[in-house]
Amino acid sequence: MRQRGGCKRSHAMWPRSVATERRCYRQRRTFCFLLVDRNGLNHQNQASTNLKTMKTASYSAILVVAAALLSSKADASKEFVALLPNGDNVPGASAIGHSDNTGRSSATNAFGNAFADAGKSWTLSLCQADTDGDGQTNGQELGDPCCEWSVGSTPRWTSGVSHPSDASKTSNESLWANINCTGVTTVSSSDASGLQPVGFLLIAAAIVLSLV
Image 1 (cartoon, rainbow, N blue to C red):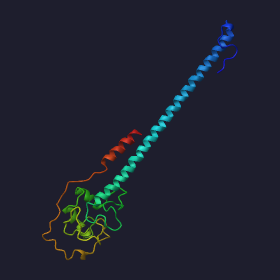
Image 2 (image 1 turned 135 degrees about the horizontal axis):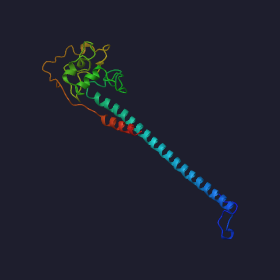
Image 3 (image 1 turned 60 degrees about the horizontal axis):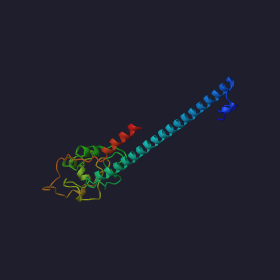
Image 4 (image 1 turned 180 degrees about the horizontal axis):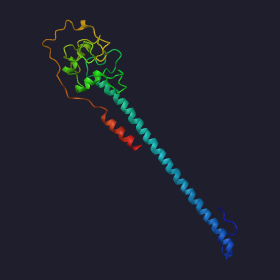
């Protein structure tokens, strides 16, 4: 801000009148106020920019965690399918333990609940149970009428299986009519082991959300 009327200090102009001195004082004070206001505005803009950056980073972290959760859920469904006889051969159901049959929803059906109660393993009790009440055991519907299947082995049949949590779908009884299960080594009656592949990601999501 330019100083008018002899406000610039010069030995040649001294002494100045009282009126001139007052005017110069007001000009200097106005200049200082403008300088302070400008600095304050700069700090405010910087703080606003920092806040926006933090929010953007938080939202990005949430998106990353959400994507990881969805990916992990899909991977978990694939892992669980591999723990069941013909788990990936049931028509129209890529995740037979979920209500939506896809695994996109975390809601589980009667078979999924029974599978969880069995420690996420194919046990004798789970095999012999009839979770959908259609008159056929889970083993008969999934190609393991003798409850002998173990992870990595091939079921008695891989075509003609039915959904163990859908009473409207059953398997053809002729598939096991001539099978003698006497003397067959069955799977264990219980297994407490279980997979929890998404637990740590849920904790991470909760931490990120608490920081927003």
